[in-house]
Amino acid sequence: MGAWDSGPFDNDTAADWCGDLDDANPGDRPRLIHAALNRVADEDDYLDSDYACEAIAAAATLAAQLPGGQPIPSAYAPEFLRGGSSLQVSNDLAALAVRAIDRIMADDSEWRDLWQEATDGDSNSAFNAVRDLRTALSARRDGS
Image 1 (tube, helix red, strand yellow):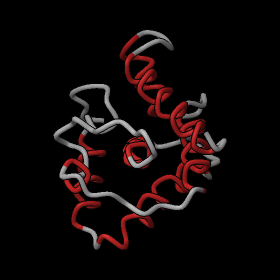
Image 2 (cartoon, rainbow, N blue to C red):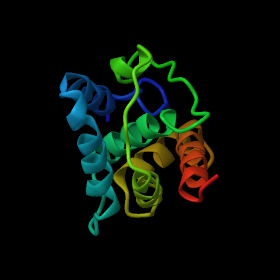
Image 3 (tube, helix red, strand yellow):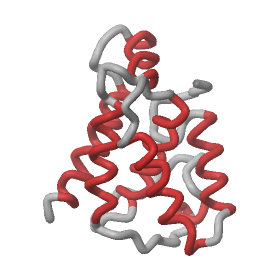
Image 4 (cartoon, one colour):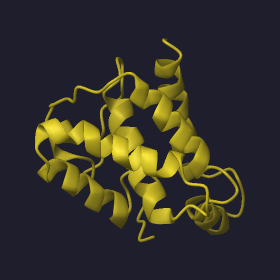
C-alpha cells in the first residue's frame, strides 16, 4: 500500500478509486460506492489491502454526504465532492459501510495488519480515522 498519510484518501489505491468515481457518470457513482463496500463486507477470506482502501474511501465519501457530514479537505478525495456536488444515496448504504469497516478492522485483514505493523499497536491515526467513520455512519444507520 503506497500511503503518504493515514486519512481515508491518502494512499495510491484510494486516490485511484476516487479518480474512477470522478470519471464515472454521476448516476453510476452510488453503484460504485455500493460495490466497493459490498466486496469487503462479504469477504470471508483474508481481506486484501487494496479492497480495504477502496472501501474506506467509499465509506468516507458516504459519510461526507450525511446530514452534518464533515467537508473533505484531502486533495485526493473525489473532486466532485470537493467542488460542492453531492450524491443521492440510499439509507442502507450506511449499514453496509459499517459492516465493511468492521470487516476491515477484523484480525484477518491485510490493511489492519499493515497499519498495526507500521505503528506498533492498535492505537494509531489510521485506525482512529476508520473508527471515526464508523461512529458517523453508525449514527446514520441507527437513525440519528
